Length: 226
Image (cartoon, rainbow, N blue to C red; front, side):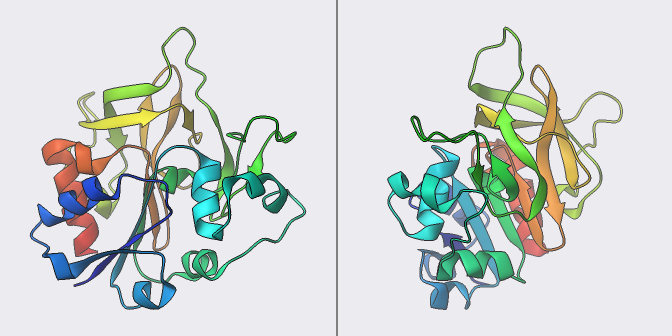
């Protein structure tokens, strides 16, 4: 098996790499790259992202972040070889944190002074990413929280939370995707939100499995087994 980590230029790739190595993968079985030819030779694809939606989109488009507002307006049709590969990917693909969020149709996490209220993202999943409506709770939502899943194979072997006791995972985010038709796990931080999504071979988790101890390790194992 070979796993490709998409180099969006906006992630802590080493933590994901080490999380995969803890599942028994060797150095030559995991590659961090933005080269489409290399990614095409991989059996599984992981797309991490931290920072901002604009930073991840800049990485996918291969442009400076300052160009994202112009390229990601509603009427635009910006593309790149890497972005096209992700959109047409037929292998199991797991987005982590912002790598999940950019699978939605749009995000309100826009650059300052952009004049936009949202940017277009990949559009693989219906919905718009927006700031967490968490009342007086602090942002970002950072630390351990409980997820409740719906029996998707990504969560095999983990408690669903039907008895009120779900699985603990580690979050760091201020924006979220609401619960929708493609939600496979939920969490609550002032509001219910999608902790994980899936459509066909595309999956995404809002939390960081590589930082989520035994539960996160199980999720990575499950993904590698798909």
